[in-house]
Length: 133
Image (cartoon, rainbow, N blue to C red; front, side):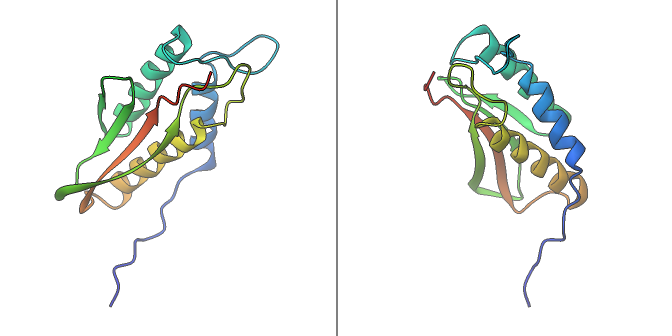
């Protein structure tokens, strides 16, 4: 007998709204984004992600270099399973590069929490500093 996770319902509109909302942080008039590490646009992105993670029922924290994590505590928190990507961009980068990996993780953790309940393992979604501006 296997424990299979039920299919989760994540509306495409949720991901699209996350992408559009985060995409406003560092958006340029002529197109593209500039969200270099530690810039004001990057700080704004952290504020936006904190709001998204909190609304998704996640515990939010940052480490000393600026990585941001949303945690869904499990019943067995001995190990953590982490998903995510980077939230900074290259000069005039796109709104999906890196950010989609962070936003999809938030949406998945929210769906798991609301549709399945508390997981066995602690799960985290995060946005990292890659420093590639």
